[in-house]
Amino acid sequence: MILLDENTEAIVQGITGKQGRFHTKEMLKYGTNIVAGTSPGKAGQEVEGIPVYNSVEEIKKHYPNINASIIFIPAPFVKDAAFEAISELDLVIIITEHVPIQDSMEIIKYAQENNTTVIGPNTPGIITPEIGKLGIMPTHIFNKGKVGLVSRSGTLTYEIASQITDAGLGQSTCLGIGGDPVTGMDFISALDAFEADPETEMIVLLGEIGGIAEIKAAKYAQENISKPVISFIAGVSAPLGKRMGHAGAIIEGTDGTAQHKKEIMREYGVHVADVPSEIISIIEGL
Image (cartoon, rainbow, N blue to C red; front, side, top):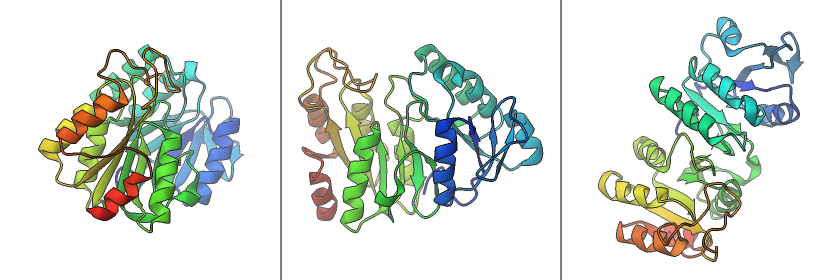
């Protein structure tokens, strides 16, 4: 398991909003240790039995061991919420999409200065089966196992996680790094975390068109990762110059095409599947 374990004490920022309420209930149902939430001006209320405070600083006075936050706050206000969490906590997960790129850049810079891990923005979050989840993913498709999964796409994560579960393999931890052009934790950081995790035996990296993050990760894996890395790149038929779903999924020139990425990643020793269903046969053949 990585990042999220039995010692995680989490808070929910934006807990009284519609999404915050719904996903707090789902996370608690899965066993996640959520101790408090924030919603300025609504201190004293409760959501699913969880106390609401005005600020992270206020929560810290009552729960000094909190170390993680998940943010369900409208995009214009995410930066302030993230800065508040980063100054106090080790792990901050930003579910919100449409966060301005400049805000994301400032959030990530501040996180680096404070040695805080940020996942997102625009992420489904993270799940460690049988331990908990800080995210919005459906839990029934995950099962404890040995495959670490990192992805830019939420729905692709769900599809592959479901196949891994159906094959009787299971996952150690699954996380989405986010589909925006600028995100916190990247593929390389995730590879390092899975490499150091004794419960992860192999790593599945799910990429997509746009940028060169997957190629950088493949080169890094060849030189630094001892565990097998299996990959699938979504967007083979995507046209040049057209954004596909995620703000980060746009091809400029040939470097960001799925075909180019697949060829280069194979040269770096990554086991690349041509279709999602091939991932299982590659894993079983290792």
